[in-house]
Image (cartoon, rainbow over all chains, first blue to last red; front, side, top):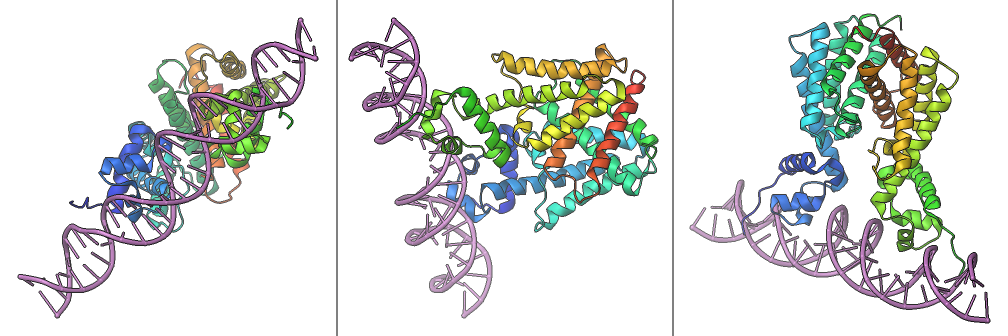
Length: 189
Length: 189
DNA sequence: ACCCCAAGCTAATGGGGTTAGCTTCGAGGG
DNA sequence: CCCTCGAAGCTAACCCCATTAGCTTGGGGT
């Protein structure tokens, strides 16, 4: 019988796709193996186990998210950059319901790519905030405020946490507007 | 041999305590049974299964959280109420790391207590926002902003998402201050 | 004292994760 | 051109957990 020709990267990519379909928590080595046309234990030649696979998905997703944020912010500044970045964040979470929740996992210090992905995202955020004149401690607190708001919003949205229809897009726009106003006059807070 | 004398309420209470110790996702019927000095299948006399148990924990936690919010807000108004409620929210999440994440589960429509708990929390939030003169669509959007910010913050905090020390309390205070300012001049957003 | 129902048990099934150890593909060097 | 050898993939086996079926028995109500 022919070989499947797998690599760790292929396994992780397929697992990420699957996570988006069935949810990160329901991701199972069994279904990944099935999807790749391989017996379950064969996966262990490429990843250390289920938890390691999840961690690799986290690294992949963090990197993709960092890319999306930086692409959205490039060439813009101030409110423009903030809005574009926020929209990109939400869009990534919506189109990748399995990968996104993995992005909150702390990076494995031994995975440089994952660590750098986190730094890249942070760097982009800092760049946007610097457009508001925020640096140092102010930037730290503003970053936490921004991340909290965005993460909370997309988490609740994807979990159906917002009861009823009631235009969610408008709520998001108002959230961004709130952040914009706050960042404009941050230090006195 | 003597009976254990279990009831659904006892099982759920112990499971919730355990969830706080080991994490909601690692909660297992096996360890709940062990903790209660009972064989695993015996639990099925009281709960329908693992998922149902998690749902009951969600109902319990939602109710506790609603209580905490309303207790914090009672007798206060405006910024005072906002700050007290936000602190209570964060405190609940910190002291109940297993229960808290369960609170984002949508209530089972067939569990009136759970549904009412959600409504109670929402009512409290609305009451606080009415102190800012917010009603109708404004209140809906403001509620979403508030919930997103709080949920995002405590989620990231508990997940170690905020790298490094850098006074987290201060960041939270600034977040609340941001919300306060935003709610003071909400409609124009 | 007895009845009877529900609490709790044991046994059995199925599924997923993990490890051990075997087989064999197929690329690279002779 | 073929032979070797490392790695890709497999089967078998084990453990843990969830769930279901069907039994046993404690202990409250008549």
